[in-house]
Image 1 (tube, rainbow, N blue to C red):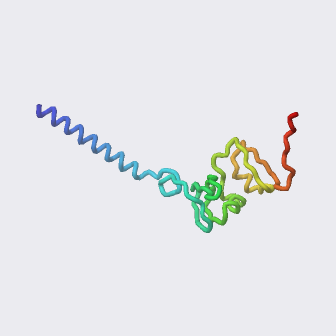
Image 2: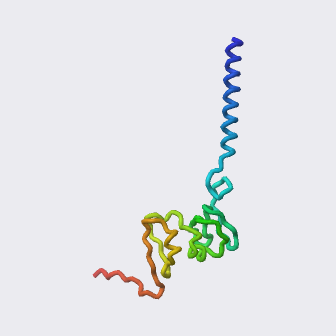
Image 3: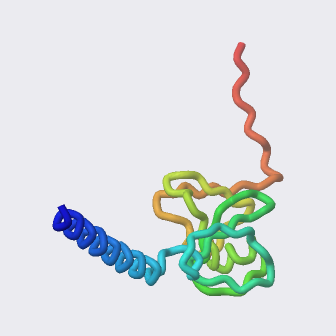
Length: 131
């Protein structure tokens, strides 16, 4: 009976060592996100330095962006115009602009996205009346 318990104790100790090795390796991994090993979404702030691939939400509109390069923020609109921010989750969707988009703005929009340019001074669409 002692042999069975000795064998069981040996197996448990080996498993503990393997679990410790795995835990140590997992702690050494840097998993995506904001460059600090954790994937977080932060509120966008002006005059702040952002690293590439940081996820930022415009607190005024709740629209999510990804930093495509390291930059110091100005405003969401200026950073989009300068090609520093890319819309997240707009694949196969519609993106609207109230002015002609710059090439930098178009470069950061995902493929297969419809771009619509509108003007507030345009005559609003009136559907035909049903008579």
